[in-house]
Length: 185
Image 1 (cartoon, one colour):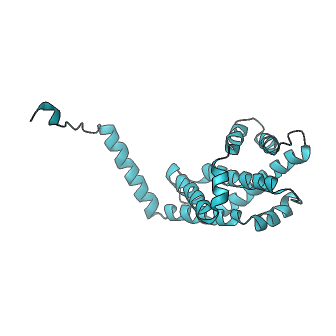
Image 2 (cartoon, rainbow, N blue to C red):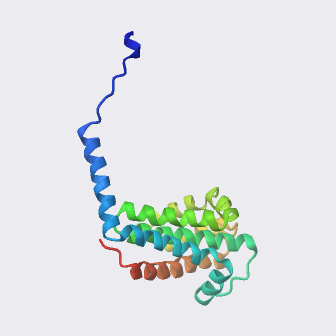
Image 3 (tube, one colour):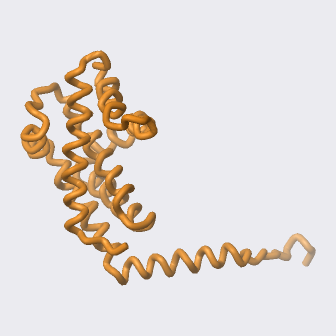
């Protein structure tokens, strides 16, 4: 036996162990208080609600006006809807673990229920533009402009307004839905 056969295992640092223990404790706390299940239920509900394009458009039309647009524009509306749902989750849910559970459930459900949408959606760069818009002073206008730009209609005020109105309407709806789940802080 030579020295190359001897494996030396380096113990984890105390901080790494403490972090791991804290994470496990947080996971157990979120499971015990029901937040983990609420987050899964929320993610599943939002995915199902927003994946039904026909129903989504019908409900949005009552808030934003007619959505008589080509399929590629409706697709962009759907992406903005899911972005807005994720934005609300990140803003309103009590901690990172619960937020991640809800968001991951949304994407798992999209993947299961509409793989074609998932593939196109997951390969797109729209979220990058929307996240940049969130850093602007006038977030709603910036999101409207980002939506119009993504639709290749950056000079068209009606598209800027559509993006703004979709964001506002979906934010209100998702805030209301989240409140109904009564997450524990």
